[in-house]
Structure formats: C-alpha cells, structure tokens
Image (cartoon, rainbow, N blue to C red; front, side):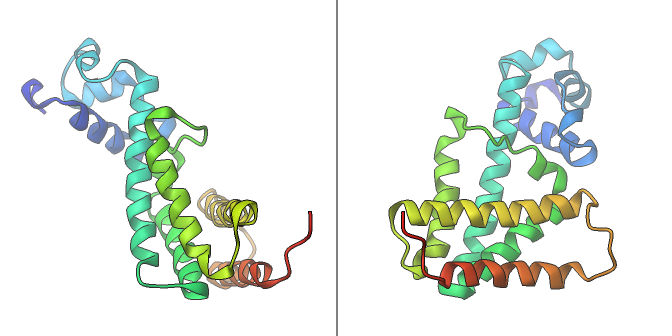
Length: 187
C-alpha cells in the first residue's frame, strides 16, 4: 500500500487482515506498519496508539456483526426471529472467529453507539415475548451468553464428543425459547 493511500480506514483494514490471519494477539502497530510498507511512526498520523487501533477494529467488527444480526431478524418475529438471530450469531463467529475475538467486551465510549445498536437488535428479537424493562435486559443478557458461549467454545475446539454440534445448538435455541415462555420469577 502506498504511503499516500494510508488513512485511518486503511489502517483498520490492514489490522483486520492481520486479525483474520493470526488472531487479535498478533495485532501490533509494527505488524500493521510492515503490511502497509511504512515505518511504525507513520501510523501515528492515523491512529494514536495500539489501544485506539484495537477500539477501531472492535467497532468495525461490531458494525459488521450488527449488520449480520439485523439482516437475520429483519421481517421476522417471535420464535422465528430468535432462532434466526441465534443461528446468525453462531454462523458469524464460526466464519470469523478471530474477528469476533477482537471485539472488546468492556464498554468503550467510541463504540457505545454500535453497542447500543447490538442491544436493540437483541431486544427486537425478544419483543414478542412481552418482556419489559429489567426482564427484557435479563433475557437479552441470557441470550447473549448462550449464543456467545456456545460459539466461542465451538471455535475454540472445546466440543470433542461425537454428537452433532448443529443438534446441540438447536437444543440450546429450544431451551432459550422454553425459558422465555415460562412464567418469569417474581422479584
């Protein structure tokens, strides 16, 4: 990449290539600079430091992930929306394990808007279950934990027994739906 073509967006693109190939731990300013064909100090015109680059990469992946999730639930409701979202979640992680691992799990001001959009997608998928306020947030957290946990365990090679993973995931989806249909506990 020519130095003149370097921009913040281009730096993030190069960073994503490194993440895709070798995982988030391989992301360094030196690696991005080498890929761009520039000296590391040249990157400081486009990103302040590695921490900012990781936030930008996380935000880009979250945007991608939100688009994928939103497309899955668009025009669907109830169990159909929930099933579509959970299947899309797993599919994205399985196809992009390193990118997904690059999502920063702690809140960052720079990614707050996209994080809110992701929560809105979860809440939209849950809308048909008549959950309000805290109940909806608790359900969204449980949905996230279930989909995230299964997909991360799967991509990490944690499921070694011969039973079919698709069957296990469909059972998980059924369990989430059954849990949403039960009478909520009283606080």
